[in-house]
Amino acid sequence: MEYKKTEETYPEKNIFEFEHLFNNRSEKEIRIDELLDLHSPNVREKSLHISPDVGFEASLIKNPINTQTAFSQFGLMLGIFPPMALFGTLIANSNRHSDDYWVFPLLIFVNAVCAVVGFFSGKVIGRMVAETEKWSWGAMLLTLPLIGILWGIMTGGAGGLFIFVIGAIFGAFIAALIGGIALPVFTIFHRWLKKGDLIERDQFLPLSLGISLTIAAIILGQALNK
Image (cartoon, rainbow, N blue to C red; front, side):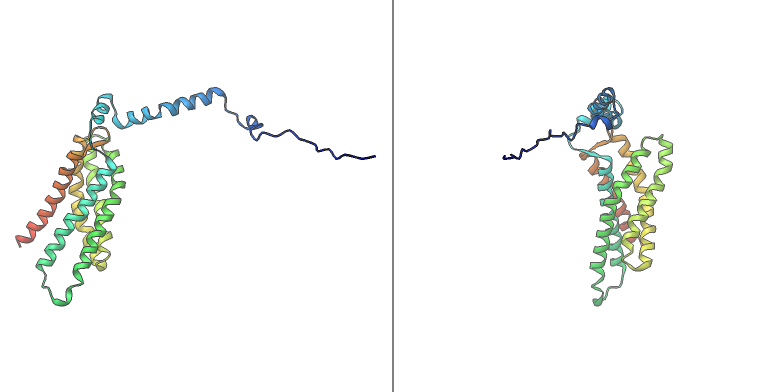
């Protein structure tokens, strides 16, 4: 007698067959989450623009810049122009020798470090300022110089590290003075001009360049009056 080997077949299991045993969420809860996801863009827009009128004005901005980007680019300008003016005055007032050629690339490198640190730290400062701009004008103006001093210490100290130890202390001190003045001035205009979280690039550039170049001009002017 021949025995034929029969293949037993088993029903194919669905890996999601027992999912309902571990999923305790009701259909109502799932539906609520879907509605929240659907309306989340509106919630974010309300948090950015505060009111429908401001939201409409923000939508009319052709070249918008948000707060973090604005302060990041402003930090880049502060890291370029005031240190450049300071280094220029130091070179002009120093007794240059033929063997001091290494000073020029060193100062250019330090200037670049200040610009890079100002740019990236400006994103953090922008988030801090965005919160203070929600406060009253009095509370904001009292807090901004402290944030500016902190920003200056971060930027000037990082650049000055490459000019021995005294350079870090001197750089942090000078940059703290600049940050303590420049940040409040810039933020006052930024709060006036912004729509929600956005500012027009055509307004941002004259403002940021004007403040940075004015500080650089003051540094040069002080050197010329000596």
